[in-house]
Length: 153
Image 1 (spheres, rainbow, N blue to C red):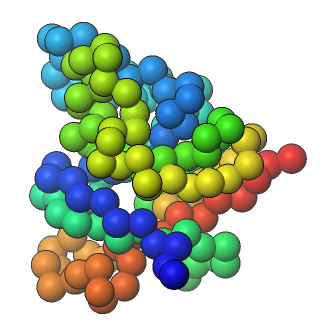
Image 2 (image 1 turned 90 degrees about the vertical axis):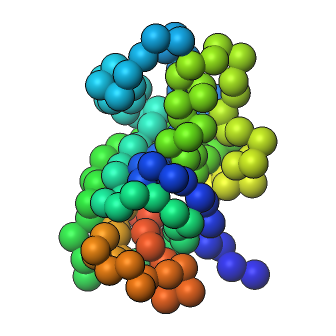
């Protein structure tokens, strides 16, 4: 059984989210700039890690790794995990939570995209394994992204 996670997003943005603390709702009159500012403020609190995929979206394969990668991380940050762990969330789900106060994360179709980890503070590195212009790359070719999480003491 693979520990890889598969997610579909049509916008080319993904997030790793502590759904127990992330405050997703903004209001019904938001734009991309407002959402970016909101995500940055939540990121500063360690509730979300948000990254662009570099392309127009599709199905992505994400692998969790423990070893050092030979690639440079595209994101190197801190994140906090609550008791539920962290969830891989699509941009589409983030926008629904931003617009509708009663829209919970994870969305129903992303509820199984959980990194079941111990609650605490983590150092997170995200590695991208493909060039966005290489449209022949598929999930069968290997993971699109790798996540490396190290628990901080």
